[in-house]
Image (cartoon, rainbow, N blue to C red):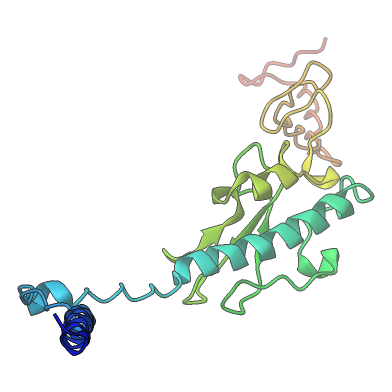
Length: 214
């Protein structure tokens, strides 16, 4: 084989090698084939449900908190006042020096007789309608311990309302004798009794005209 033939063969080999490499590079450089499309998710599943709407604050809870705060302030003021005013009449808000009002702006009312026996004093709210004694009234002794513990104890009594020791209303004691109805005095005697007629003088003759004297 001549030298020219060898060069031609070698060139062909080199060209073939380069062409195979370029072909391999071309195949490698091609993007990978896409996988088949995934099945689409239904619209009902794809859309998430909306979050629940936030609940508005409970007005009753806010009212209870305001009521508890108002009654705590009044009863705490009474506890401080009672230490220096033992035996005085049942106080009102003016005596305590506090303007206690319920959440509706009505002044609270104090009572020393309507509350339970284990509460020294009670506070009453007239409720939303502002009418005392209606069904919507609220009382301090129906609230929590943070209110009732402030005035726990026997009912408040004034000194004038407490009967003396050893004496009860409507009952007689050993020291107080039973009263008897008064006896009417006899009628007064007549100052000038009727005068008796003087005896008539004895007649000297009897009825038959016979003289009695001799």
